[in-house]
Length: 352
Ligand code: ASP
Image 1: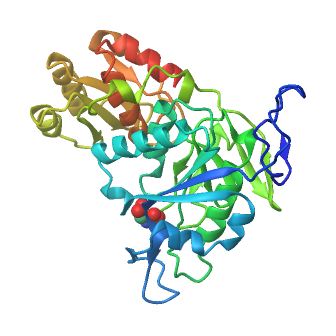
Image 2: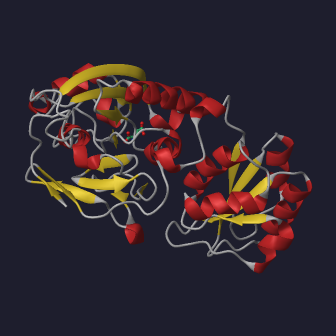
């Protein structure tokens, strides 16, 4: 589906002629919520692309893109101004609750969140599972600081505003906009440490792209999201402690004991291959099950599907499907708020 450059927003679009409250047309109203990250960072010289600090307010980030005001009526909010690897469960919940409140405002048409790229996919997926709105929500970041030669932030932000202002982006779940590509929160992942083309969707595929100021939407997400999920922020006081462990040659079982003794309610294993268990990981899985700690087999491979295995039933394990370890942790935290039955949790991994 090709979407032409946004026309002035018509809030009555789609209503019958008699139902049109008025023929007034206005710009889409977009809230720009700042969380920090590289997109808001600066370094000493333009060729310094790493070792920078978060310095710019979200207003300053927007000021670098005056053309964005041709696309939408933009209101800025700053919730945090940090590196995204410093975001914890409390901040994630705070962001989600603020985003929910913004989206419930009938005067708001869409939301753009500026965010560090290091953990952007975890935030995007958490919002994808919990926000109860069909309005466009777009997360955007940058791989180079604002002071960089050929900084990528300004055009990423311009594209994100354009996408959030596009009515056809409604009902698509939470979206990720970097490097001209439109990714689905459920599928996109940061797959490179430094290049501007860092976010990939691999076999899942992107939802679309922006080219020549036009939004091209090619696909829709096949997994349940936003209004269609069982999770709601109102039912969540705090998120449970879920750890991610990594499997490798010669791994010991001591880290599983440590996580369980530290109070983990769930463990996600970044396993080798198709979620295979090393002797230590199997020992860890058995111990977790004995201690009532949910155990999910994901994979360190990064792409592909972790399939269910015969031992899952006997050991009470969950197969992560195509969720990488960091996203499997997000889903497990939410699932544990509803059930401790591994078969029901497997059902969530099969649908979301
Ligand atoms: N390097 C990261 C970024 O690209 C820093 C962060 O995630 O905050 O935004």
